[in-house]
Image (cartoon, rainbow, N blue to C red; front, side, top):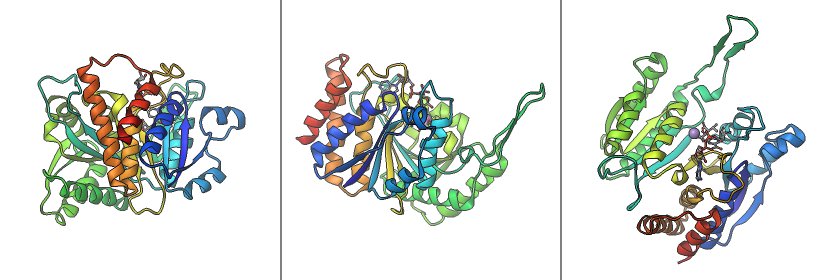
Amino acid sequence: MRLAVIGGDGIGPEVVAEGLRVLRAVYPKVETTEYELGARLWHRTGETLPDSVLDELRGHDAILLGAVGDPGVPSGVLERGLLLRLRFELDHHVNLRPVRLYPGVTTPLAGDPTIDMIVVREGTEGPYAGAGGTLRRGTPHEVATEESINTRFGVERVVRDAFARASRRPRAHLTLVHKNNVLTKAGDLWSRTVAEVGAEFPGVEVGYQHVDAASMFFVTDPGRFDVVVTDNMFGDILTDIGAAIAGGIGLAASGNLDPSGAHPSMFEPVHGSAPDIAGQGVADPTATVASVALLLEHLGHTAEASRVDAAVAASLAERASSGGGRRSTREVGEELAARAAG
Ligand code: NAD
Ligand code: IPM
Ligand code: MN
């Protein structure tokens, strides 16, 4: 396996080191190339993602990324210039974000909810595409506009992916989340596409929810969701709620997939660079390790993926029963690696 590694900023390199430790424990035949991208490179050279690096990345089987973003760099420079550019250039149109409450893990929700869903977030369009948009500064009548791009091609391919995933799951249920009562143009395109693609998947039951109500049901009744398909922006927000209800942002994994295999897919925790705890060695690496399981699964190493997932599950159960004392990033990584190695 040829793996490109981008630690990035803040806690990114700390959690990625543990992700790699666990990966090597189950799959030693990995050849890594580390890329120093992020705030340090930007300060030194003004570059966020040199074209030559992008070309090299294309030659890898997958990418493991920590997080990008730094308080010393204007907001958006690294997020757009590095992370989003990677997602766009490598055509990561399926942003896969499982939301699962592992046995023993405590949730802030009341009762004992079942949470086992997959959010399929569109990854290359919506307001993130940054097409058009203006900001006229320097007058009392400033105007800022942002444009949201939704193409039939882009919507259809992610909707079809979500239907295929739903059809392979026992409940076979798909919820479209949008805001078609206000965003009537994009909403119409998404709703029609779901209806039309749905005809190809008669075994999948389809529901719809506006994003405000969906946010409420994530908290009050998450068990109603199986597969959720939604646009880039709604998916970003919903999956932080998903993380919060399923044990916290330190556990939430993601894959930025190009399911066609034409470009390497990229795996990263849902969380960011966490400047408030960076450098202290206390970040939870579990989200990154769970992202490594998604990476292994994506590359067809199903048995190894299961071992990593089982290690995460066992570790979380143990943390719950032992009261979960505060452990270092490295201690958690070493424990997960030992469990995964078996
Ligand atoms: P964040 O996810 O970095 O942090 C939010 C809170 O969660 C913080 O209190 C942080 O300490 C905590 N947290 C995050 N990950 C944790 C972990 N593994 N273990 C324990 N606690 C953890 O979000 P933010 O504060 O909104 O953003 C910080 C920076 O990260 C910004 O520059 C933002 O643009 C960037 N960001 C990057 C990504 C990414 O690279 N994919 C994702 C989100 C935010
Ligand atoms: C995420 C992050 C990114 C996003 C930012 C940093 C561009 O919040 O991966 O969830 O909005 O997609
Ligand atoms: Mn986010």
